[in-house]
Image (tube, rainbow over the protein chains, first blue to last red):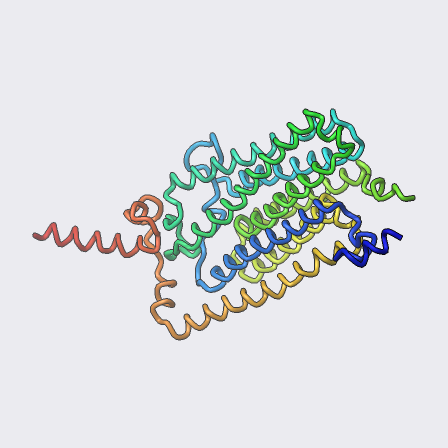
Length: 225
Length: 158
């Protein structure tokens, strides 16, 4: 009977949740959806500008370097492939951490969270190297030393979009690493054992996979096509 | 049965392994296509490869969202809440890229300066370490080096 009165007084009168997920997880999905719109707007803006100009730099010429390789090495796509695989692997270890959490296996959660954090830091290090390398070559916001693929002069649109979008993604990776470190500390402090569930790990996992998902698009739009 | 909501989420390690392999294979195929594209000059073939890469990208996105983010195993209500608004992006993309392309065509037709500038090749010397490097934008590289030459010639004459 009490449920009947609740149904009439509270705004949510549907009884059972239509989504069958925890509140925080649903809100994480909504946040990720808004974030997807932000990244989508960035990438669509990039695409529009690229479609509205006659020439564009060739990514295989711009991104052809590798750390510790001799100067002037021609290795297009190699370094970015390494970065992509680092992020995929850290996504996999995150799934394994989520799965371990569902099985209430604290030891495995700690192990896989550490691997995920290492993957995130490795990715950020790669990106830091790439940015500083490009900066040394003279590329930055408002500066573009690269010519278009057809040898004509290019505009600064290329570098502006590259640094803005990869920077925004890198910031997401950084926040993801911070969130994962907090989750690791909370696991080590037995917070989730006390609560009786590891749902926080699942939410952090959603965010981390989203970061990987965005990289799939950024990687394709800037380095491949 | 009431506790299955949690147990259904317990997809096995097999599924994780399978999706990891699929993602790796898709990435490797993308990279092979990318390497292959470097030496291809035919515009039509390049466009076809780029299209294939984008299809592979969408497949990767599907596997990450469906299995790693677990959306495939959620209730249909949740799937629709997330996927339908994001589906509007398809229209967003088509509209904006079409608009960008149309803008380029209009400028090429009615702005001779824009058209001409995008056909002038920059001299090889200006590439990389020319004066344009320090000045910043390479689009200024052609102009600045040309100016630099003019002024230096003038100075020599004086």
